[in-house]
Image (tube, rainbow over all chains, first blue to last red; front, side):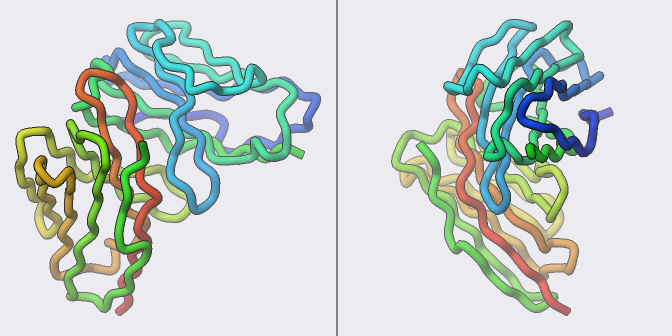
Length: 114
Length: 110
């Protein structure tokens, strides 16, 4: 099973709302990633968790708060977002978090901030 | 640092071949190739590791020239299903970060 699942598929939220994105994998991978992708642009790395610890934060604004409750789950908590945060949010996982590994992407959550 | 992809876009007729290039000004330890169709997630194609190698999967293959810090993706006898945006990702040696190029939009017409 090489599947990464993400919920919800679509999300519309106001600038004062609090919402969460969820990601799950059952491949036994120990590294999980959040990417942000704007239209016609490549995915941009936001956060990396390795063995349930945050290992990379690419200077992401604090209105995005990641959480890794266990090795299979990854959440992204959203609060007070701006319209420019509207994008496709992709979750990925890889076995150990090494640069030589394949990262498997989930289908993404398409977020619209009004 | 973001790898540079070329061309930005290419249009093919079914059955034609294409080459997509990816180059980096920094040392490349691994190159990851993905294809993304509109509205979908990136799908892994192949990974090439430092040491210079070539890989193939049916009619899609890739090479990695470590000396030139370049990788090329070869698509032969293209099919309609090959249409999409192709991204190369530059991977670090031991760190987790994958930095993607801007992508190459490939369109295959009947």
